[in-house]
Image (tube, rainbow over all chains, first blue to last red):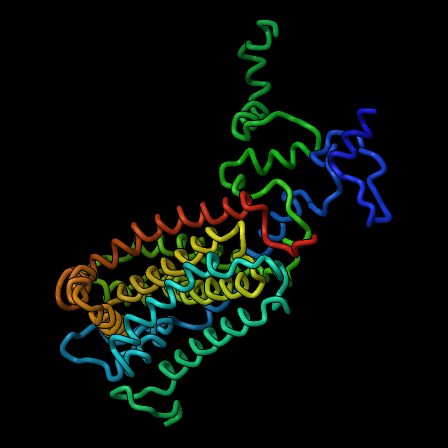
Length: 174
Length: 247
């Protein structure tokens, strides 16, 4: 029978499984004549969630903007430098590294970070553990990346909060 | 169809339906067909798949981090366009424009706040999204290139934020960009030239302000939109969001 041949083609019988595809339902859905899978229509299931998330983000941003004012200091003055002069927070970790070594911290470290991120998927290719948070199959990768993230956060925190005049150490309450 | 169907009277009677169908580019179908057509018949939504795996909808899998970054970008574009009406990229006027936003323009201060906080949040959420993709191993084949596009998007996000940082032309902006551009000057051989190209001079001044402004409001947003479109489209072409292999 044509139905049986088609059924075998879509969902082959597996001797290790106690169940099999019994019939193919006729109809006009996109799932008709396909094996079973766990998918849903993007509209409405995905789009409604996206819309709700957008509203949440919008409300939070407007709420924060009503309460907290963006910083605005004195007009720019090329003759009078602020001390310390700090880069934006996401570059302050790099600035902290620069204070140890201008070339290694300012050029080599950022270049190494960007290049290793770009080449990562071509160097770490084992598909094991894909699709699972902190998969036990990827312990080393998880550990290395976590070290990188924590190092970045610590450098940013040091640069942002415990660096005072002339880039000397000082405590935020000092 | 008879000639009567094209008569003026009939056309007016059918006007709402005909306009609706000409815009949406589709006729009626079964409910499933119409839902699918709502996605692939729309130039913006066709970047999405018509169907999504239930795993992609689990909030605890993605935490919506990539979407949040994208929504913050939309808020930044909207608030940024409004800010452009009140801003002049001139060392004489830029700071005065900031004060006008604060004291003269209705809700100007909220507008500037929204732009500033969304920008900080976008850097943070783009980074968190990268962490999610790493920890779930989602950069593995066939999604390698989408990870590369994502890294480029993170860099463009940093550049967008950095170029915007100078525009208020206050002490914070001026010295942050001075420090940042000095880091670039540490590059061997070409460092000084790179900084000169970036600032349009040897120090932060009118040329630097204009360059950063043009990059911030024109070039970098266009690059972002193109990369985001490819990024989203590749999710669909690469088989949706990653999920466990045996699923």
